Length: 285
Image (cartoon, rainbow, N blue to C red; front, side, top):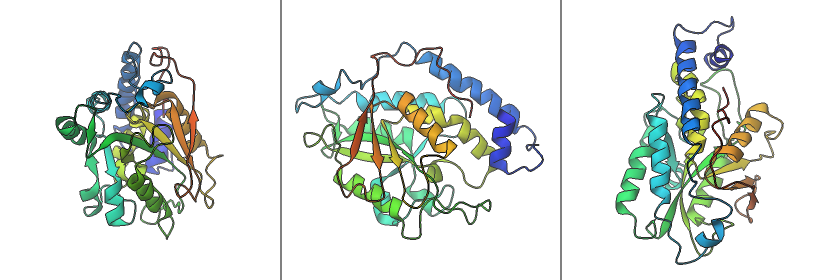
């Protein structure tokens, strides 16, 4: 329920949420569910049937960025927190996962809608900027240093192995399906950077927006850490379910602690040429 959701993120021990949050979450949930109902008749840009054509050197990728942009705009129009992503180059500079809304780290976190508008304005006839195709990747992982104290909790280990892995993936720009013909400019949705870590109201609303944000990502990256038990956690199982259902691409990437320094595992899942039906409700998170 919305009450349980907001209690979980606000830390309320008596089951009571700060005034107004539960009602606001319920209202936003209804808008998210209506958004997915509106996707029922849309034709996906990527599908298993389209992959062979997009593998060709002459393929036209110019519709991908506008397709993602339309989804991001639809998310932002719901009235919740805006969608934000982290460029791989920012991780290379920082050396760690940025936290929102930390003032210094926030300089490296981009508004997804404005980024895509700029990309569309600059892309060539095949959809490339700087020789690469844009890709939004949803990063699913279990936090390495969890704590009920938000000042102590951190998603990465002391060596910043996740930040390093994402940086390497972005620098390579490769894809197990489309490379070497195509390379990609990766931008990551990361909970630590995309959800306000300091404000209980914004955190509750961001959790409600999660399925909508997933639908604006091309792929899901599942980081199966050797030091944080990823698979059995209910929350990461929900993320995988959302990724398999709503991400734009019919593929997913499974990483271990050594990835991407070794070949990636790509999972193709069956998908029809139609979007999820109107009866497929967005999960009430």
